[in-house]
Length: 230
Ligand code: CA
Image: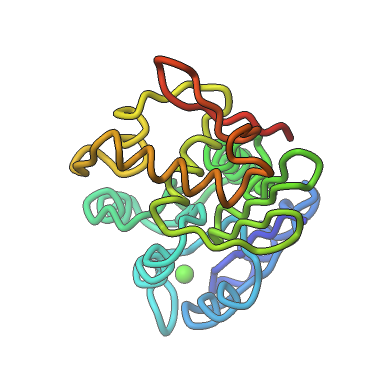
């Protein structure tokens, strides 16, 4: 089930969007103000938010900032006026896209779909929960949870970054340097040996036999790649 949260205090707009999205098979939650929006977001598993900028209690901008502090959930902003467009651009508040009112519901739905495609690999938000080798390895990218044969295993934040980088680019071979840059960014200084130690720890945690890995494969003379199958 793909869950969308609409945050909009104008009832009729909210109802129209809801009806169009439900027709497309989405499960829709609605909130009428910023406070309610945050409550629902904290309680439910929300895959995309349509967020009006002008809201009672807490502005859309504030809601966006608070959600962005802890989540990468795609956010599509609704703005009432052209001036708001500049505001969104200028403040770069972390919305992924925006639509100016008045809009056609059809256009909005197509923007929602496009945002889903951009935000989630394999065009399905459920891809955030990845299962490899017939359930042997399970990874929830959003919650940073990893399970080996159904049992939760603990990875350090850096180990998780290395693993998720490899997984997000299946089949791609990473040199050590490329892996460091992709996982930690350019400002991060690390040595080849650091990567090797992350890889070694990861293999001990997720492989059946760390000497004969099936997930984190060594490509001799080049680097590493992910070898799990979905
Ligand atoms: Ca409003």
